[in-house]
Length: 272
Image (cartoon, rainbow, N blue to C red; front, top):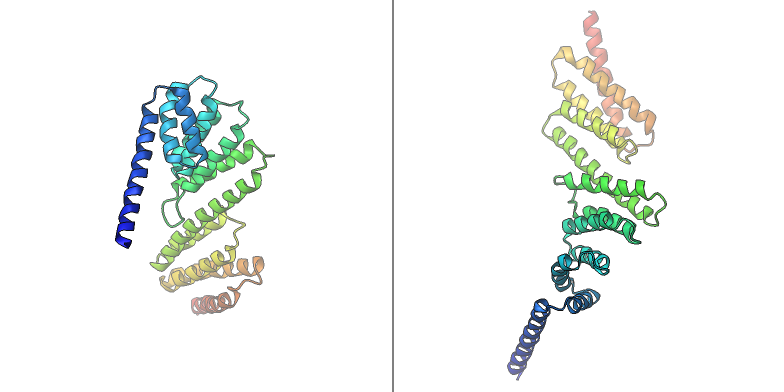
């Protein structure tokens, strides 16, 4: 009995799917443009964005310069967004804003173009070219619409994008440290500090510069050790002055003692 019921349900499902596909193909083949537009909008309203997208695509060149073109263009852009095709979504939202500069929806589409790029941008551990593009687009929106109701959300996306770029750069600095390229690590961490001076991880970056310089000094020839330990000591003071309550101070104190002792020893040996 259960097997018969399953078979019956399967056949019913196949019938429904075939009927649906057949109905959609009939709509696509229709020469009635208004009918196709009505059905496309129905699909859109039902959140069937794939079918809506297919019909809108076919209608776009036909309905250009008609009174329905703006609304069609607007919904067509959104079908890509809802289908998570963020590259195409960004492209069509941007084109909408350029094609209909006087539309009531132009600000929204400018914003959605930037948001689509943000959605497309990858996690920070891989290439960040698209994150840079999304950041530029979001910043452009903020500059263009300083009083927009979307400003808070846009700034949130900007902060998140900047944080991804910061993490990417900091990871590169850490990698240099892990493979014993200590000089390159200090240069990379200084670059992170220059680019993100307000970072909540600034004390960590300073500590890592100090730590890398201590390791760099240890591995150096004697004639180079003093100046490299001196850089570590200078960074220690910068850390203490800027972040006196940092969780890295205790470990930094130990490194400072080592560096200070080494410098004094080297100077004493030079005087003898």
